[in-house]
Image (cartoon, rainbow, N blue to C red; front, side, top):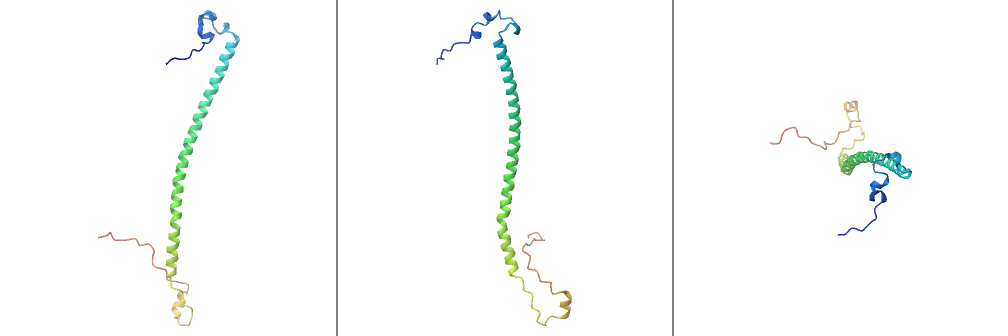
Length: 135
């Protein structure tokens, strides 16, 4: 595989001819000093961008965790809401079995009236919890 021929920059071709090779920054051309300062500023900006990107990545990770928790909670709420129809239907069926309070036809005994005619017998419990372990 052959590489295309590209011309090398003049400062790469002859590094020793650009001023003896051991000169400090005081002997460099102003264009080179300006370019170095420009690159330093660019490096500072890139470091700042890297730090900000790392902070943003951390925030996005926290957001992902919170969204995963929210999704799990949403599934749980959906499961509860899907059961409400069955719960309401069971309550309705149980309430249909309630005996209707008798009309006052004069046959009530006086001691029953003293107890209060607002007492209505409750339906049988919808949930039975065993108190004895199974045999």
